[in-house]
Image (cartoon, rainbow, N blue to C red; front, side, top):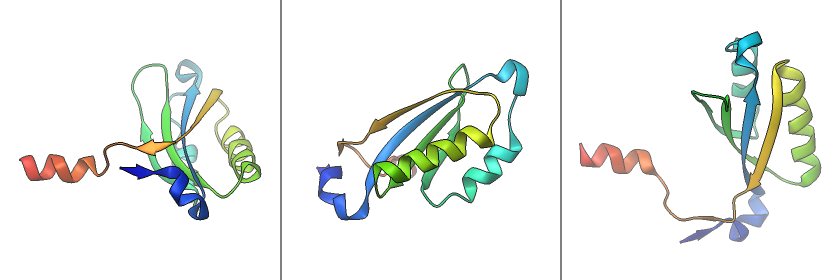
Amino acid sequence: MHSAAADSCAGTEMLLQVTVDRRRHGRNVVFDEAVRDCPEVLECLLLSGDMGYWLRVRVASLADYEDLRERLLTLLPGVQRITASVVLQSIVGNGAAALLSSG
């Protein structure tokens, strides 16, 4: 097992759920492009349903997370909510490799 706490020197990994109002704003290409240029973002997924985006990020400190959060709020006018969770431990990793090897 891999502990996120063991990587404290590399920062804190977090999962962000970004809820957007798609009825007014739809998909935001500006947000997509800005997230690609954001070094803290390790992965960004566009989701169906009400959620909007799911981001996996790594930040060095709480202050860095707050800075990232403010940048995300200004990039996408339709943001209704950003919910953050700290990754405590990775139970299973590299799911893409497992899918490729089973095919």
